[in-house]
Image 1 (cartoon, one colour):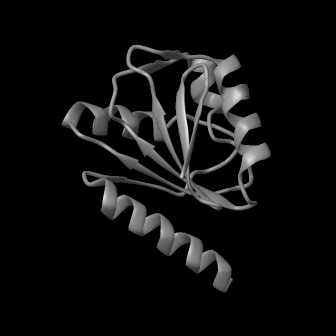
Image 2 (cartoon, rainbow, N blue to C red; image 1 turned 30 degrees about the horizontal axis):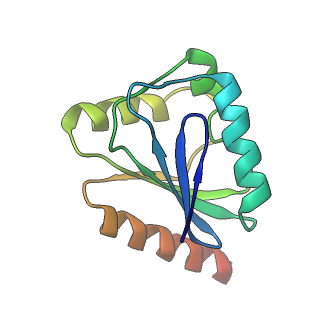
Length: 128
């Protein structure tokens, strides 16, 4: 596993097609960070990858970032690991924001269960 530090947090390459994203505490994720995030994913990940969003920290998004976040067509699925009810509610709210691409996303309370779901999603994609 290789971990890369970005301006907003870190991304760990768990597999060639699955990455774990941890945003730093108290970050306001803006449009420039979305661009940095997307550029990293395009350059480092195998096509049709999945993301494990580990919500260890508390952070927010600008409205523009919410609209453009994770709108890459190369994203197969996303699993969010939530450690509190408020994080789960804010994630559900983020999912409802209109954007160009509908997300295949699921919220989990345990990291290992989330990772297994992503691995299953990657296998299903290969069978299509």
